[in-house]
Image (cartoon, rainbow, N blue to C red; front, top):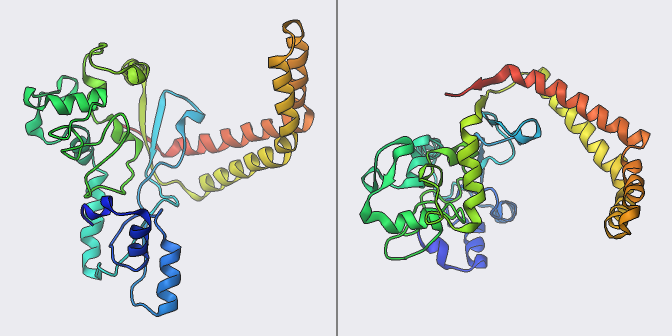
Length: 305
């Protein structure tokens, strides 16, 4: 859709989307308003939805050392407004999406083109003439005459991506590990601003110990177990814990702000509510439902190299 997309007001952009003037691939734009308008006015274009591979679960629920990247779909599929997209163009668009989720595309977003750096893997470094890009990636320093923003490279600091060709394609988490400059550069105070020092140190230390898995599409039994786990969790949060929210807030504030010598007794009042029989039973049921689903899902986890 070009640079115009970035220099107009939100209301102008949304109006053009609703009128079908843009061929966009985003779910979060006013699709419903567009549908209402085209149906009311008898327009000949519509929105078509295409499922894509996106993250479905937070793997940290089970272990911080495991990262899983499900090859399954969820609600965050893409919507294509085909007023300007004919049927014969759909395969090209799908190939474009597929490539944008590749490691090659991730590397281009993280580093730019191969002529901008030397070496590979943990030895990759920007060439001296791309010092501004290096500072942009490591320090968040911006210089419009030639930084990463200028080249349409994704920023480590603010996750911005100025390249219209990839705008709207949310990347799966594994793409952030495509030899990001913040991971491979030697750790020193000169290379990092304070806000990212802790995160970078954590990544450099823990990536060696992490296991990466691809989660393949699961069977009906696993899907049923997942649904049971989600139902139990919803019941626990909405029906068992939620009625005590105000009480728990008051008790924990009393424990924190009360006299130090009464902290243990005040805190016990808080934990007594959490460990009451109905809530405790709900937590046990949630744990059992999760383990059932987790064990079934393990049959569809392929370890990545």
